[in-house]
Length: 441
Image 1 (cartoon, one colour):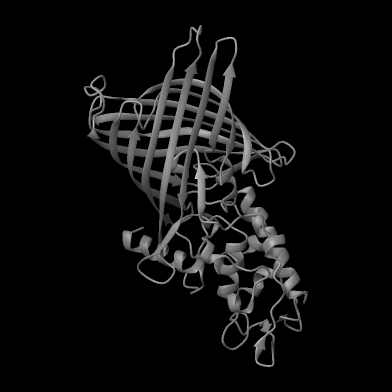
Image 2 (image 1 turned 90 degrees about the horizontal axis):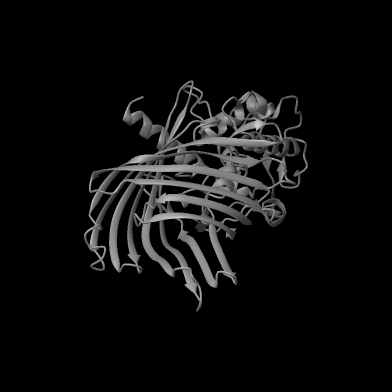
């Protein structure tokens, strides 16, 4: 597919769903549940099928790779999905994850209640409903029209049940364990559950006579920027990060004191493109300028890091059910390029090793989620390898995290982590185990 066609698909997708990344919604895009007439009605007071489909895909997120476009239909992509047989029978969706199928079941249930007249006071269904829910989306707005009820010149709105309906916060604030994961939206439920967690660990060893504390967190704020046209956006996420790992010793201890203290400020730009066809593939691209303050050696480092992540539903960077209602998993493959210039090479002891660099490589691994609500576990294991095209330091970093979530939304948990290798940000060696309180949002 040519670049121009890719852009056309991207613009149509963003205009239709109002997203710049998979299942991303900002606070400004928050919708009522059930829908208000302003969300889905035309000026002639009937339901607009494109608007209704767009509303439902926002409210019940489905991976956009599940959509198999209908040629020359002229329909919004969301409507193309809901007009297909996968709405009536989600198991027919070969590109859908288990979370996608759950969303389609919820959409089907909502449409069944809408057509059955359960919201009749606001949306009058057609007199005869002898068709499946997906078939409603196939005709023009006037075919099997749902009438938006007007009384005294004013729309009759259904009661807003949003607080009861959804557990997904629409806040633009994001908290993760690494800045590169800030592009993942909470509505992308499985990828969010597997995303890195901010951690806090405080321990005191009375035998070794030492005290340790570790704080690792990146906090960002999503800013959707309109570009090219209505609804088309570029996601920009300014963020601040901190990574403190400190060992303090007491008199008589044989342990050595140490400290790793970094704070960084940056911007994460993310965009998403799709190749359509029999086997659709998504393409995440992020650009991340960052300025790092290393208080351990007093160095200052400016970097521009690039990442490319292919998305193939049901395996590559996308979850697939391994055993029904037991577990889901995905393979992680990300290509990366890190490019850095030291604005201050730091103390004399590290000046010689703090060299500017261009590194190329990737991140590879796997992630697994428990689908059993009574066993809320997630496990992610990755290896990051970056070869210096310019510079001297080779990056090899093995990271593992097992988390037991302690709340329904899986925002908080207890994490067991093990890392070993050369860190990507500071190029410092690290080999440690930790048990920590963790959180992401």
